[in-house]
Amino acid sequence: MGAARLQRALVALLATVAVLWVGTALAHGRPGLALLGVLVPMFGHGAVLGAEFVLLPLLHGDDPAPRATPAELLRAWSRETWTALVVFGWRQPFRHDAVPDHLPDDARGRRGVVLVHGFLCNRGLWNPWLERLRAAGVPCVAVTLDPVFGPIEAYAPTVDAAVQRLLDLTGVPPLVVAHSMGGLAVREWLAQSRRVRDVHAVVTIGTPHHGTWLARFAFSANARQMRWHGEWLAALAQREPPAGERPPFVCFYGHCDNIVFPPSTAVLPGAAAHHVRATGHVDMALDDAVFAEVQRQLALPPR
Image (tube, rainbow, N blue to C red; front, top):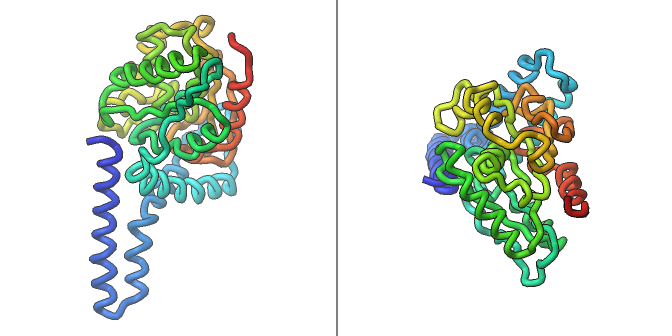
């Protein structure tokens, strides 16, 4: 089952629970309880996110990233709660094909962008970016990584096909932008293909390059591969091109990333690192500072 079907099923289940709850509450003359029946299915995930935002400063340790203030954590939590509702409750389950790839006939000589999502996501995550890139006339392709719970190695052919698609269209090595696990899929693709000259640069956003503490609770193949300082990540580092031979990497990381922490685990050695303040994990994928870096990369001359 793909991410879209899985999330549609979850939305349907929560909607059913809400309808039964509200109907029962109103039948017993309890309008306040009926309202609660709407809010809990819609925003109950906020409690789970809240637990993550409590954990991440506790596990900050001696990480060199600046510590988040309580106000920054609260701001990040509130925004992440809303963003997660939109992304997982609407955009990915119901709108993942709403914004098509942009492959104009006159794209020859213009650098394109390959967009790679992360764990439990699909191409719908990138809908706002796809719209902005299309408006700017930038050729772009957003992939969906399947199987949802498969090993990260299985995603390499999908990345390869997207890069080749833009390379054939434009004749210019594309920029690759990846969120979370997507950055590991890109590194795995580079390790397998060694197509280092076919990519202009790679921008990763909240990618667990050294794993994440939360992955100790993982159950799926790809999530287990993201364990903090895990064996799979160590093996990947041995197989992939060294820093001097791979495309330039730009890593965005944040002290309010509620999924990938401690924060600096999202920075790859030898990469340009940019710290994003007061922004949660999914929200970071849509951050204006990240998009500004993408625009800057698109304007750079060929390597």
